[in-house]
Length: 363
Ligand SMILES: Nc1ncnc2c1ncn2[C@@H]1O[C@H](COP(=O)(O)OP(=O)(O)OP(=O)(O)O)[C@@H](O)[C@H]1O
Ligand SMILES: [Mg+2]
Image (tube, rainbow, N blue to C red; front, side, top):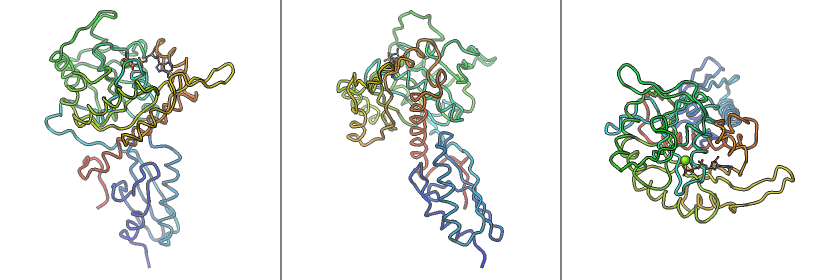
């Protein structure tokens, strides 16, 4: 007796995606099933470019095993990345092009938000995604310094739209492009709102899988305005390990929850310092606070970034570590964090019943 599509679908319903930890049928990751005698072809959608390669191989094996149990001789799995996203509700539709907006935030200043935002954006790009970076820190824009001189400067189009700069392949917009370096910028709440409205509405981002938003510290006007203007897929919270930073992140999390921005997870930055000369590891700001906090508030822990002189140097020199030393352990940590954050964004989208029409699925 020949294998039927309902049988294959039922078998695939038992397959758990190793990266998303959910079955592939109810999250509609199976696009088509094609059967020809004893041969079965399964096309699956991977919801992010940052889907890890080992998980890709494991998913293939799981699908093959499940379908072979039905008696199939040859099982072919073809996977294609289709970024999961949800169209914005009509009152938050000013942003055209980016599918997912990821905010990078912290309760405290100087804990490494901009460092994480830049390296997260570049890591997602290295994973293969199209990425933009919005420097929403109107009080102290540091993205232009961190990314160095642009390959392409920002311009205005004929119809007065802003064309983003291109830095290291990323589309970038920063308030730093429009004010002189060193000039103190005093923004009142309504000015911040108008500025962000223009950034978000008038910028020709083009199609992007992710727009990373670097936020100023704390829980102020920028966070509030952004949450009102655009649909934010979620926030990555950055903390240093010590108690004083953790307390502020807790406040930040509470604020985001109030404005209905989901917390994607926590990154612990400046986790420890390994002496390059003797290999001794010193926990300058303590260690483990980020992980503990994630457990306490019930969110994901994305990883720890050590104190690494190359991060500071890369930030000052305009060549972030993910680009300057892509094979370093620290760059690999950023790539992993990017992967975890993107998978969390995808899980949040896929777990909702209403989804992007672009994710066409089997009937
Ligand atoms: N893991 C790290 N190792 C070494 N230096 C780091 C690390 N993380 C950040 N830095 C350095 O610390 C400084 C502050 O980092 P960054 O500007 O990213 O923080 P921030 O939270 O965005 O600050 P602000 O609140 O002013 O926006 C920078 O000089 C950066 O290069
Ligand atoms: Mg910053």
